[in-house]
Image (cartoon, rainbow, N blue to C red; front, side):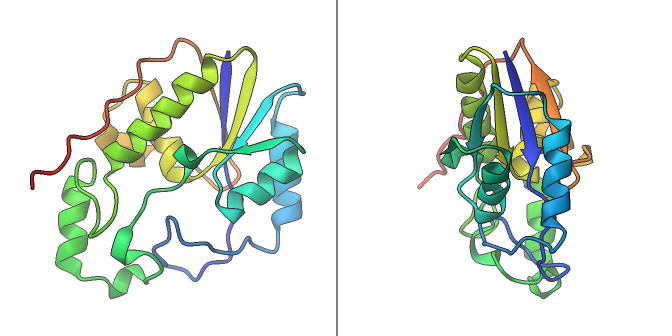
Length: 186
């Protein structure tokens, strides 16, 4: 059983834009990038699953007609920062988040541990199927799953290179799914 993670292709977002759940258009080079992704994949049959974000969904549709959405594959929720230029965000808030991103989300957003928990639950379920699952998703999800699968601390996940249109193959054995974060005290 194999899980193949595919990061969506390049986007045409303004440089320095904070986007996770924000919809951004694909770059003009999409057709060529999508063909390169297709060439990097094994021959079918495989199950095809996608984040519901348009930038992932379009690539998944290019790869095959039978695509299933899975919300567990969405990118990190940056909350109140979504759609803002990084350099326009309060520096002290960004620095505080960067120092504790694994367990602390941006204001109104999601922690990296929460993303990793939902993504690893998806992965465990996907590999319980027979054969190959191809998941078209985002850099945050790919990094979280690579770190989890290889036993790296989540704090080191952003050291992993995950370029646009990259393909990452994970094989069994898979560790147990990560536990979701504890709810914040009220």
